[in-house]
Image 1 (tube, helix red, strand yellow):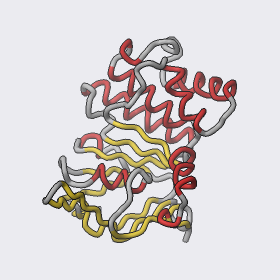
Image 2 (cartoon, one colour):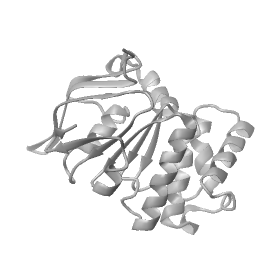
Image 3 (cartoon, helix red, strand yellow):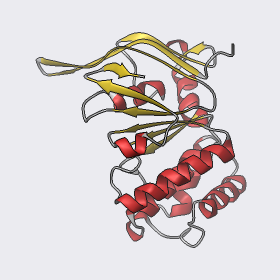
Length: 226
């Protein structure tokens, strides 16, 4: 049996806010096979975004272990962890996180430039991806000149420019109307198939979760259904 792309065991995460502790995850186990399309479903505060951040290396657990391609993330140096986040993982956030002073093309190229991809190659790849997500006529537009759906498409192109093996999307339709949200999910599924990318989404929306072949339900920091 092939080992999963990513495996997590006993993940726990507690945030301390002054004198108060908030236990967000409590002993979560999950395996993510290569090519999987997994939805993490749950209400706000259930722990799904925290789990997404942990498996993407954006945060560290208080307990438990994450193994990616046979290697423990806890054993990564800071430089190796940065490279993991930049080259192996693509992130799509609900709030888009585009830099307002940069154009569409520059926002998408930024991740590639951090990975030290030559400028010409980065621009060519970004232009191709932006055309694929329907924004070939928006290359010189700033985020403020784009609709919410267009900004999310830019964020998806940016997440894919370094050809990650794992794409993590945190409430990717949360700020969008129903029609645009449907279009974004169709785009994510299509690009996942084209790029052979493993896709994990966190969502509170049952309709979005239903699109995934596998759904994990999080309730109060534990897996209630998988």
